[in-house]
Amino acid sequence: MKITDRSDLWWKTAVVYCLDVEKYLDWNDDGIGDFEGLSHRLDHLAELGVSCLWLMPFQPSPRRDDGYDITDFQAIDPRYGSLGDFVEFMRTAKDRGMRVIIDFVMNHTSDRHPWFQDARRSRDSRFRDFYVWRDEPPKQQPQVVFPGEESSVWEYDERTDQYYLHSFYRHQPDLNIANPAVRDEIAKTMGFWLELGVSGFRVDAVPFLIEPPAGVDVGDPHDFLRDIRRFLQRRSSDAILLGEVNLDYAGQLDFFGHVDAPAELTMQFDFPVMQRMYLSFVREDATPLAEMLAERPELRIEAQWANFVRNHDELTLDKLSDEEREEVFDAFAPEESQRIYGRGITRRLPPMVGGDPRRIELAYSLLFSLPGTPVLFYGEEIGMGENPDLGGRLTVRSPMQWSTEANGGFSRAPARKLVAKPPTDGYAPEHVNVESQMHDSESLLAKIRHFAHRFRSSPEIGWGRLELLDAGEPAVLAHRLSADVGSFIAVHNFASTPVTVRLPLGEVPEEARLSDLLSDTVVPIDDRGRAEVEVGAYGYRWFRTVDSRDRRLT
Image (tube, rainbow, N blue to C red; front, side, top):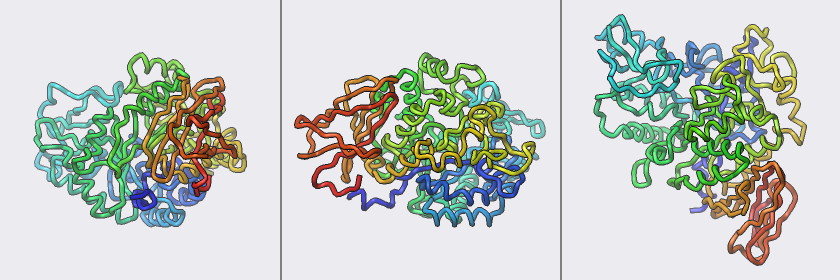
């Protein structure tokens, strides 16, 4: 079957954009972003080339964990609008050709959720078994997710004289997925949002979601994830599950579902490649990234890797060795306040590389040209920085910067009423904003728009078979992606000096050449199947192999 016959697997060539409704655009001037404001910015996203929006939690919440502590899974936080506003947003997104996936946070609830409020009143509560309770915590406990903020995953509840499990914060009690009633509620929640038109879910903390309580035998815990996937496909055949599974590749394969086993997650974030990319940046050596790409396992045709430069959490480096992590810390987070949990960085990319536009572009060229689906975090398209005053993981969750107006055009409310404030340094809205970059062909916004559109017109990137090419230079990563529509080649130079490399392309059609996808140039291929390519300092090149028979526009 040809790629052109597989358009139902839309996620293979999607451009995903993650945003927080609360921080995107305030339309009613109360200092908080809302769905009406987001609807008015969908044209910006459509022009950027986004084809799928991922919304961070927007359900009712006391916001003690930026919305990941939910009190009603089937409602809209009134601060962001009504259910009608959500439906109108969905209609507008569909009109612009964009799908929508939403965060699926069912590992835990807020401790203010009606289920938990009822459960903690009495051991006889009908919701008691929705959560995990013990008379005494087990002697062996898992490591806490947020070291320094929690010392145990068990919290004593005085009213009923028992402890409840919380894998994350104590105000987020874990749901008991061994309870069939809890599984039914999860299915109802998925069905509810599917009926409103969403195209899938980003599944939060998947390993924690399927892990049964200690001492409870539920058989294979992956059966629960398989059941979720089957339910999803029954309700919406082309909906997806994008999973947060920060494990090594062997562990991630378990969550995709092995080739000879039922499917589980549709897509997973590639944490190992992301972390090696930063190590390559620091060393100005492509070898760490190339080695990890070489280890990347092949997936079933319906599955996909999701690539990212940055997400909404800390930039975790937990898969690096202690020495490697320290290298990245020293280069990109030299101050202790820029590090968190001993494993991560609380900064966005541009400040980490000193605002060097070459290195910023290099990172996003990799994002869009490595095999897989690119995922952008809001503000990356204009090079937003972080606001250290917000503290911890929140530093990268400052409001979107639209213009040089007050509050960066995010809101007309007084600054004291803002849900979060923009930075005040060199990355403040007066220096970094959408409006200033809209008509600048050399801006980061223009570059990322170009990357996104070239990615969308190059299905080889999402579908192709990866081959690493020997460029003969440690600083250079050269890779080819081959599919039934053609061959895509990208070359990236991690060094601060220009380089010329000879790419060994093997057997190619007669009169074949490399057509540059980012400029109006052609690179010849000699009779030995080699192409000489010049790459600037921190530079990149994208090519498509073409010959006299090729009918594709380049």
